[in-house]
Amino acid sequence: MLEFLKNNIGTIAVSILLLLIVSAIIVRIVKNKKQGKSSCGCGCSSCSMKGICHEQDRDKPQK
Image 1 (cartoon, one colour):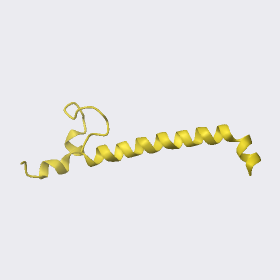
Image 2: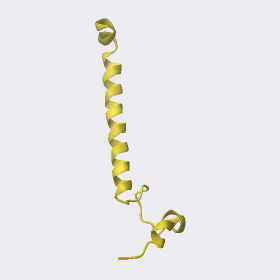
Image 3: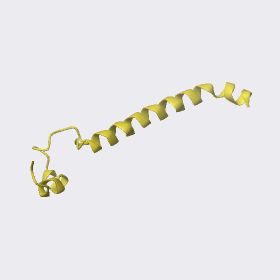
Image 4: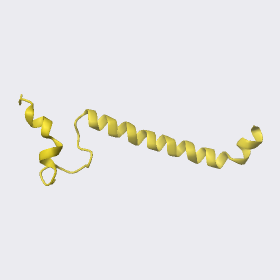
């Protein structure tokens, strides 16, 4: 077992690093989604899908 770890430490380290990066990206996407932020990063005013994307928001009464 120790020999396996010694021979593959580089691969294991890179895999752990990539896993951490992907996990951080997923957490950020979920957090932004819960806050109602757009996933594309641009404003909705110039988007061709703006009428479909936020359709459920138009049905809610404004406060």
